[in-house]
Image 1 (cartoon, rainbow, N blue to C red):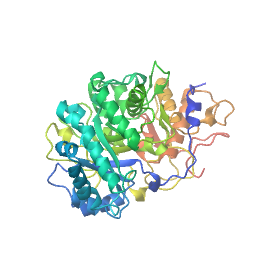
Image 2: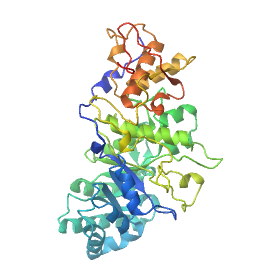
Image 3: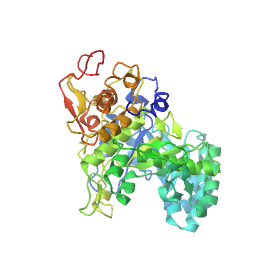
Amino acid sequence: MASLSHLPIFLCLLFTAFYSADSQSFIGVNYGQVADNLPPPAATAKLLQSTAIKRVRLYGADPAIIKALAGTGIAIAIGASNGDIPALASDPNAAAQWVNSNVLAFYPASNIDLINVGNEVLFSNDQGLISQLLPAMRNVQSALSAASLGGKVRVSTVHAMTLLAQSDPPSSGRFNPGLQDVLKGLLAFQRDNGSPFAVNPYPFFAYQSDPRPETLAFCLFQPNAGRVDAGTGIKYMNMFDAQVDGVRSALNAIGFKDIEILIAETGWPYRGDSNEVGPSVENARAYNGNLIAHLRSQVGTPLMPGKSVETYIFALYDEDLKPGGTSERSFGLYKPDLTVTYDVGLTKSSQTPSTTPSTPRVTPSPKPSSAWCVPKAGVSDAQLQANLDYACGHGIDCSAIQPGGACFDPNTVASHAAYAMNLYYHTVGTIPLNCDFSQTATLTSSNPSYNACTYPGGNT
């Protein structure tokens, strides 16, 4: 029989809740402002309300944006800049004033629920600033508690992945030894106050350092052979899970198994310079679309199964004044005229509820009812096996192609892959992205069902 050795692990993770856009409180977006062509905050607020985006991260605390988001229910993460840290650390009154001006002036109409004190401070190697980070966070927390907002507004700080001395395989994840004492102090504070460890994983950069086709598929959540963690025996099917679990292992290794992880930034550029590997509309759509589908599945990661990590996609808009290569200015999901740069299924009107206890739903408008997703002619058995593993490894019910199932015979990789690929397409969402499989699948109006084996699609 075709290999489905990992299937029981994923079948146990199927959830039974109804899917709805309103339940997706873990999907957020970064709203950067290093640009001179952004639409007015009020227009952006209306745009966000038309999407499934439930969280927005600001790098500062722009009052116009915070006011525009009042009454929308969208959760807002605001930021105290690295330049604010010395005053916040040295003077509790400065911290109280900061909270009064940037939180109390808008709360609760504007749903501020997170303050990030500094951005990638430990990456700066500024020892003076690093030493002031924890005192600044403590003073901000004290100011919130004095305003009866302790436990309502979380206090964290955002870290770069360079904090890790190693992360491959994920079970070997460890923090830089020179930063462990600082981290332990920060994490003890965060444990006491129930705030998450915020980090910026970018599979895009992992691909740039290893630009092989198999690495691209692994980074884009596309069918691939997977990577086995020799320390645990777990097979990872995508880079995002591997990076997040590397952070999980590093936290566990220094005694902080109970700290939640928050993804403050992750994304993929849709455009780059001629010497940059990886940027393209196709890759950006695949990464962000499949990431959203993965989050919606609530499958979680191998080390944190059964729930989705709070994740902020980078970014809402391009920031045309950013320095660096073209890719630095090309992460936006939306254009300044409020149209999509490319579609990843975030629009509310393109989503429908589901009673299926299964998986990701990038569920934009359904294709015609007589569409089935099948392998293209000439695809190798090795690629079909990768497609099969990928589809059945993302929470769909592949029991029909196990022994005794209605679609077990013929017992071939080609037959089993065809069933699983089509089931994935109809479970996750009937958009072309979900019938891509690294360009080895196609849509057909010819029903591939046979005997008692019924393929979802059509009127079935």
